[in-house]
Image 1: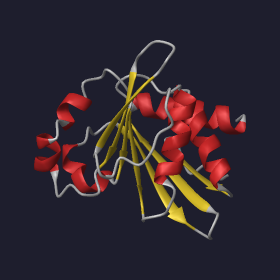
Image 2 (image 1 turned 90 degrees about the vertical axis):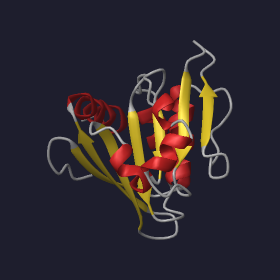
Image 3 (image 1 turned 180 degrees about the horizontal axis):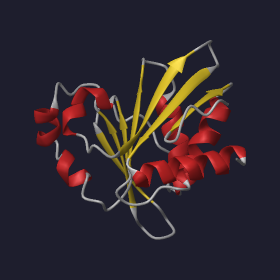
Image 4 (image 1 turned 30 degrees about the vertical axis):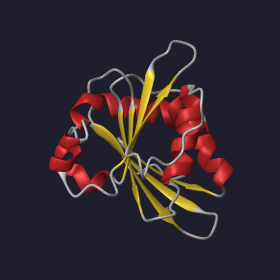
Length: 166
């Protein structure tokens, strides 16, 4: 687990279960308004990581891919707060994001997970946690985390401590 520099982290997951556990560690740390961008090829593990994030955050119903609905809203039973999970794969740009109510999702009422964020990158907040997922082998994935902004640098530091104890 090499640490590249402040605000970056490069790790490898060896299984779907480990990917979900890493997601759960991150999900437990999220606050309303956090924006998590998950980028990578088809099958890289974005949705499995999102499932873990939802579990760690405390969703009532497990996350599933929002490909056909574009936006899924998940409630946390403990306090009825919301987590938003968006799939931007079918969006052709920021104009379409605006048409589906993307600005309303970014209102700070809950954390936001975006799959395929590169499709609407110019509409995204500049401060965010960007996670690039890469397929290494059938069950191994490389995660490169890049935090932009002090909140996300703190989040990444807390995630590193939670997941690896350092």
